[in-house]
Image (cartoon, rainbow, N blue to C red; front, top):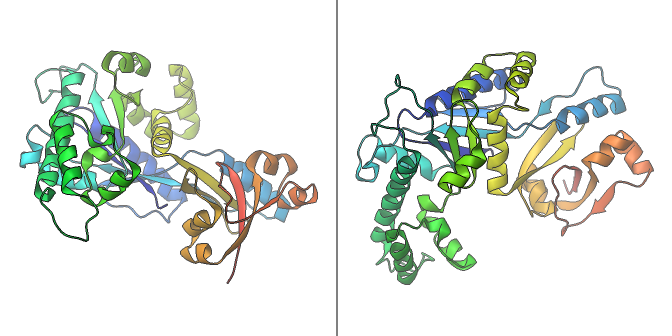
Length: 358
């Protein structure tokens, strides 16, 4: 699939902009090394952390006897900075319409919730109350979807897949405060309402913007938000201005193993059911994002649409065995390269060479 798109949402003054600016600083470093990324003013394109790629690059350099490492192209995530929402957005208050239209375009919502106290940063609702803030945004998304459903409840167009009965079922549940993604729907019903682009069908990650030391599990137990992770936008902003070596030292000083932004990217992948397969050669070493459960021909199509049509087979080896034996040549000699056909389901970390008709 193309780059995963994560929409950062939240009330004003929750730290959303600080978090996004930290991403932009990371993007600047990323673009310096990988100039293929296309940047728009409201989008930060950052690499998916994957230490496997550097290992593959070193093995490829040694195996092919290259003078330098081949280019490393990680998978990417787009973070979209969506205008701060206020109560009444569904009715057009503030930048409500812009906010809602941008959410329709992303794969997953990253809902930043303020948990920190700071008298210098005024809260739009007058006080820090995470549960209330979550309910405000939840209510606005539900209201927007109710408007969409109401416009379509009497649709008799034969080209649409959804029925008035299905629309009515969703309206009834949303009226109770239940998100569309939590309504008991069959796979056929989920497919039928795709064209409605309901906001509350999108998966949500809750990010608790905390002062140093807060723990996400405590927040999850207290507020019942899942999945949730804690992050300090202030710390992430400080980290983004440091060199890689300085970042590692700062994280160690804080007792953290990795930056919060790296954890956020991984959580987005897990929530969307995504994995990466790997390709390597003299031209490049690259990670490709696919949905878990995707078969080999469809995975080949992610590289180029013609590859799916012309798929013959895939030569496949696990990352661990590829590293253990030092590349394609040795893996073939010891029989670790598997010839997989059209029904093979790609696994995370598979190193693959696709054979296709030209």
